[in-house]
Length: 126
Image (cartoon, rainbow, N blue to C red):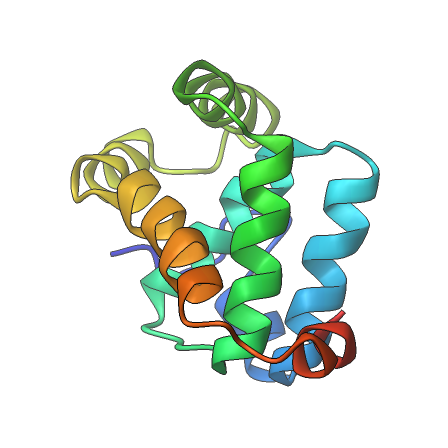
């Protein structure tokens, strides 16, 4: 999918971050309400096949769900990302989106909450 650099988030950067650090990056982007950076992070994670620990995945998915609460917000973030990062492959980002990326991450946020991940683990994650 999107394994090469996608501007603000690259596969190489992700390789150097542990799961908690990835969640902290997502938290920083969320505090700034930087939706396109959250999209870039999710696309990079999916592009390299990175699976986060359940508590860190919950933290990232919940942060994304808060900032990009609607399908319209998600689509706007993708458009903003493409405008801000002209080196990105629009066709790859579109293929990632068409592969069900939004649904996967939103479902993950809900299913992780339903799985009752311990609050301490989530707090440690962010």
